Image (cartoon, rainbow, N blue to C red; front, side, top):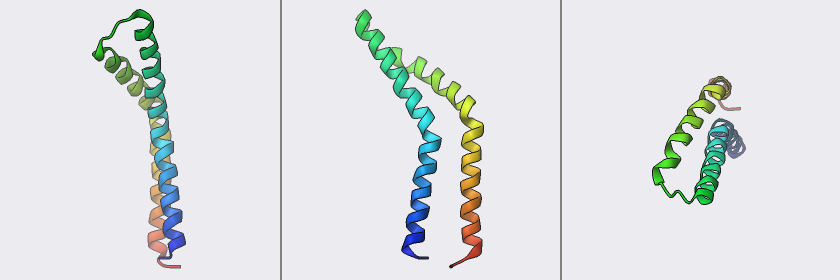
Length: 89
């Protein structure tokens, strides 16, 4: 396997990782910022207040984006399997 092929697979892997984890991480960031803003405005400094809304938002986003995530992973895995089967080029 050539260096260029390894780098291309690594690039594809990172891209797939970002596409799969991106919606969850962005949701967590936005919900965390909104809760922090709410805590700053109301001066409620309860540490556990951030966990439940974040969990609910993350589960909702996972339910919405799960088909996209599975399809992305499936396509990447099939592409990788095809490369393995085709052997060295």
